[in-house]
Every structure is written in structure tokens, then in C-alpha cells.
Image (tube, rainbow, N blue to C red; front, side, top):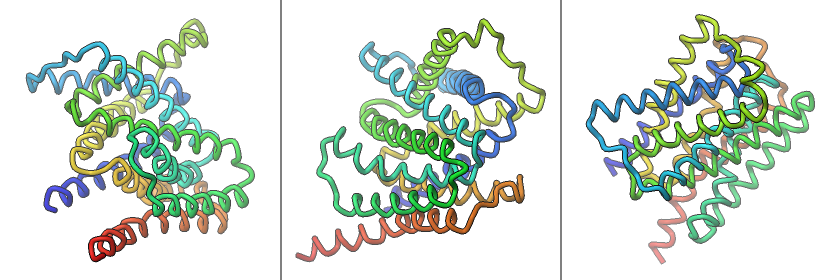
Length: 296
């Protein structure tokens, strides 16, 4: 229980940092692709330095290398869709939709890890769908942003489950190091094919560099490695469930930094409350369900 509580508290700190990531995404003037390209490069270098200073071996076999590189691709495109959704809609809309990661994880984890489907997770998922329906209904001006944010949520659920499968055999910092490198490589290849390099990269402003370093070192290198590490103790679903607090932290921070521009309709907040209520009720009902089964 002490290990579980300690890891849950660490996960809450990580989620608060994730909430601040949305603020940085709004403040940085780069487009979403270049923003994530810089983010993953800085995080890759920071993790490499940390591993070198700790004297940790970096070598993995080729099958593991390609798996971690592939997961890095998923992480990269999750972040690209996340920041793009913020830039074409609002922080509040993006984070509200990102709570649907729970729904995607409840479907992906049984399929990929081959564990039984839990009815309570499915019910929670349907409540989240109800909340998302309300957000769609009351924020029609942000349909493209909502769809982009839901794509990001699906990718977040996917890489969380994939990381859960890797953590049993590999150290969190090594996993994060190769995934950041793989994501950086994936975006670089995409930018070459897309012609971004031939057109010339946007030069970051001085303020952009400060925010990028903060984003790459604290919000990525530390937070990402910590979120992988806690899966030594916590399930992928518990991790994603805790990450669903990100909308609360992020929306509150958005009000502090951007004021009325982040105000949404009443229907949006009703939908977000339903999503978050489903998230908060799940662990309570889950514990009762476990107790009732033990009592039988």
C-alpha cells in the first residue's frame, strides 16, 4: 500500500506538469510539428546525459530497439495532434477531449495485453462518450479541434498500453531515451518527406527557447520517465485514469494565463464534468466490486 500511495502521488505531480504542458504549447510560437521536433530532441539529449552521468548501460537488442522506436513514433504523433488541437481550438477543448484516453485504454489494454474486458471500464467508457457528445453539441465551432484531440487521446491510450508491456523487462529511463529518439527520428523523416526542411525551419524566439527547454527537460524527460516508472506498481488503466486529472489542472492554469479566451459554454463544462465524474467514480466502484467478489 505504501508503494502504491507513493507512486500515485508521484503520478499526480506528473499530471500537474502535463497540465502545464498545454500552457507552454499555447505560448510557444512554433507550429505543432516543429514544436514536438524540438521537444523530443531536447528530451532525448537530456535523458542521454542523465543515463551517462548515472553510468547506466544504453544497449538493447535490435528487436527491442525497433519496438521502442515504433512506440516513439506513436508518442510523437500523439503530441503533434495534441498541440495542433490546442492551436486550432482552445486548451479547455483539447484537455476536455483528452479525458477520453480512459475509454480507448479500456478497449486497447484487453486487446493487446490479452486480459479479460472489465464491465466497469466499459460503463466508464460509455459515460465518457456521453460527456464527449455534449462537448460536440455545444462547441460546434471547434469540431476539427475536437476530432484532432480525440485522435491524440487514442494515441495516448495506445502508447500507454504498449509501455506497460515494455516496463516489465526494461528500465524506464532507457525506454524513454529510445522512445524520444525514435519520435525525433520519425518527425525528422516526416519533415523531410513533407518538404519542411527545404522550406526552412522557423527560428524559435528567445522566449520560445526558454519554454522549449522547460518543455523538453521538465515536462518531457522527467515527467515521461516518471510516468513509465510508476507502471512498475500501477496498471496502465490506473495511470491513464490519473492522467485524466490533466483537464482540471490544465483548464485552471489556462484561466490563470489566458483569462476569458478560455471560457466555454455551459454545455461544454457539463460534458467535462460527466467525463471527470466517470473518472473519479471508477476507483471507488472498482474497490467495492473487488470487495464484493472477495466476500462471495
